[in-house]
Image (cartoon, rainbow, N blue to C red; front, side):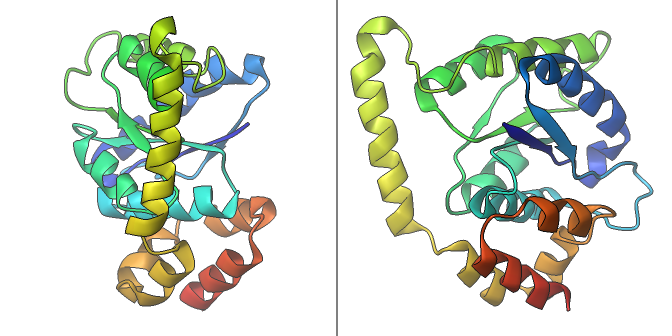
Length: 212
């Protein structure tokens, strides 16, 4: 699984800490981490939490990433922005239990974490525990056992509902505020990583149009 990390500007200084904790947990599981930044608070490309959502939508809908880890100060803004995108089902986790239940019950493809609220001494350990429980087993297994069938059924219903209630990603790239979208796709290594991993020609062409 290819796991993308996206940081917005208020918490960009923590990028190295977050990516180190993430790689420590998931690389031994055989997963790959792709760090889309921001890499520091001084990056030329400054991402807001709204742009985190756009970038997550592009990565997940194009197949350039299978899962996105993101967040902001509280994690709430990033979660809302991500869930405004088609094909993105983003949860919010402050604890390892939150992460485990989101994976098993909701089977989403994106997680927003609060990187400022209640993030102090031992913060890197908190992240490791969250990542361990998020990826410890395939998503959608259900919890508790007697709720597995209705939970899996509801996940499929939600996926189908989102197809109706959301515009597709190409439409969004073509019709959303151009500077907002361009800013979301202007990270230092975006072109290198995205065009290497993208599996959707239509989205790739729309991205090229935005960046032209």
